[in-house]
Length: 112
Length: 115
Image (tube, rainbow over all chains, first blue to last red; front, side):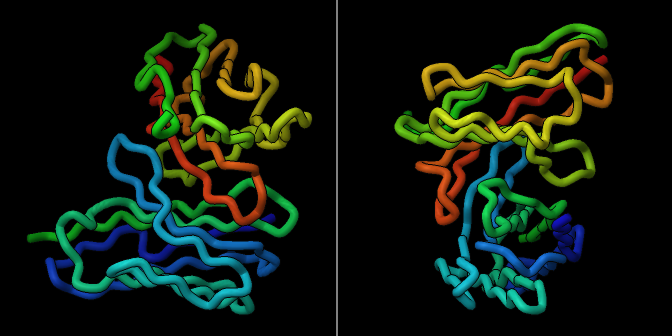
């Protein structure tokens, strides 16, 4: 059974810092990995989708990397802002399945 | 529509009552998913609909849970004889075709509280 772990569970940083969120998964036979953002009381917003054949994806201040063989992904946020405060979720899709397996998330607080 | 919508946004019910949660996917999306997010837990997959195929019900936690999708669009998740452990946020998502490359778009969720 695929398990997805996210470290740290919570992170508090001052505005302007660069930070890294970590995601690990136990079954490397994934089709893709996705990073989501969840704001309190809201649904999930897709940030980046990395296919298994890719090593990284970038969108603005966000960069996600994938090392499929070691079962790891990182989400790098550059020059953090208070508006980045949210819970960040990592999810993997196993080959042959259409559903996602999620980690429990990292709750990020960026202070002004 | 512009996005996935869910109703109600909040539902408080008494133990033993039945509840129905509704999801309106993005227009034209053939794949629809239900997930549950319990306090302190990650999102758990519940059920998946793809076009006219039989749904994947492998994530439903008990036979008190069921879902249907009428006309390939709107979906209703029904929980019978609710229990306190059913309290959670129920999220619906849709994707264009359900293929492995599709992004899933999530609704805002329904927060269910069972007293």
